[in-house]
Image 1 (cartoon, rainbow, N blue to C red):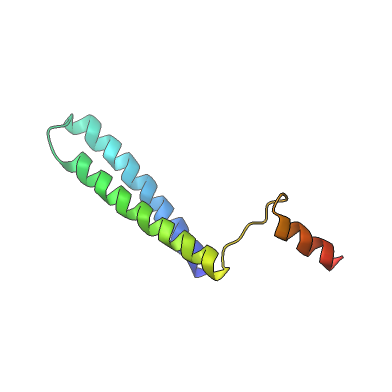
Image 2: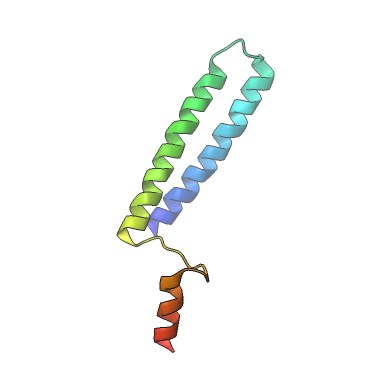
Length: 80
């Protein structure tokens, strides 16, 4: 369960970084490096989030409940 909380927090941080980069782009008009720094932070957060997503899928904490997922459909049929 903790991995879902971490992923949500990272997603919120990613959105904050995205909008701060937009703010710096509009306010500074390319005169400072804050927009570039914001992009670097956003890339680091995205890479960390992808790592947690892959870890969650690998360990089985995260999975698919989509109706077209064959494993999910087979598990439902076996339960009936």
